[in-house]
Image (cartoon, rainbow, N blue to C red; front, side, top):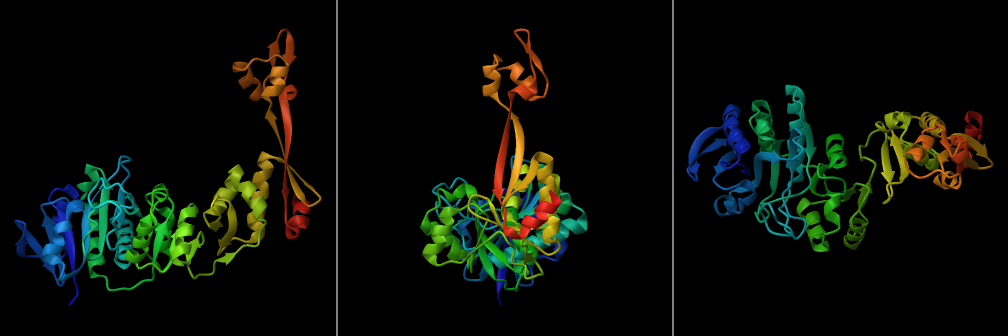
Length: 409
């Protein structure tokens, strides 16, 4: 029989509360560990260690031969104070090991159990109406040397949340679901993005894939190849799902012949690539207009290493709908014309050089002119038109969309 171990810590306020909450989920006392009762339900055991959880490297001495993996249920701490329910694999991606574990050592991840825990946290949040963000986290802290797979399920980010009964019970339930898991999902390694890994979380929520270790963008510069190799092996990764920044990651993947997927979710649904003019779309993205912002919520994007859009995918948006939105956003920012095979984007801007040539001194007068109002300089009126430069940006567009553009500009 495969057995699982849920680990909490007496040093951790949330951990103590989670341990107590397990009693409501059918766990019964059976034996003791480090002076505290051991709780059991079926083939799942729960303990409360006297050590901090990030330092619990000693558990293999007592449980490794018997138990398949460790599910740590604990607190999440963040200076932002955002209410969170999170899941992550432990490990130290760089030479720093400030919160337990060894430098440049990663624990064995359990992507399938992590996926189950994350889905259960979301279900609990929605069912209980909790105002909490549910997400994966990037790989961080100890323990790193345990011989069995490890995952953390956490509640945060302040003492208020650590004592929030419903949130604590949600984590306890998710930890049990993770320990009960027998499902097997294809797994990948995450790279890029920020600590809370929104793109990687979305992948787990919306596809059949599970996620193991996640290497955030801020750790990539210091990441060594051998640590990357560890992350791949200890995640049982079939491919790397890369948020758009990460040239070093692409090199490491090439060295291991590891497939890379970027941008588009592998949902297996009806999402299709949109045959749009990507240069025009990119210009509209830079403008930041409301129409494109609204439609982007329904898009899946593939980007290059600079963040430039390369492909767009959608299950429900048409090419013309997206192009029309892009054109309208550009019209709000520029004077738009078509000349030959190019889209001309005209704009006007305050010219400090022209203002100085007319005797205007840098300072408040610059701001007044840039704001569209006239000023007096040595008895002479200087109006905004006199210190304005006209600029035209030329964007070469595809033949497919030229006729449409001429009809709609």
